[in-house]
Length: 80
Image (cartoon, rainbow, N blue to C red; front, side, top):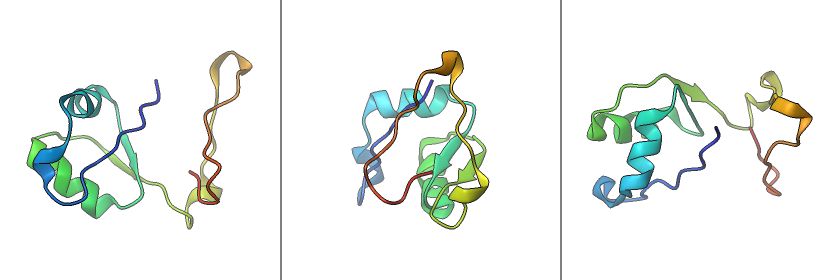
């Protein structure tokens, strides 16, 4: 399952309960900035492996889709 989670910009307490549940239930967290995401997860008391996903590493990663269906993508130029 892929979750796209909006994270708070300023106050770490502004994250939604549903976002916290998704972060707690996932196996790993792919993020643009592992330092900032680590701060958020530490604040929430969640320990998950972080995978760096930004324009410099996107060529090293591949998306696999089950049942040959297309994967979600963003129209933005930077994707992971």
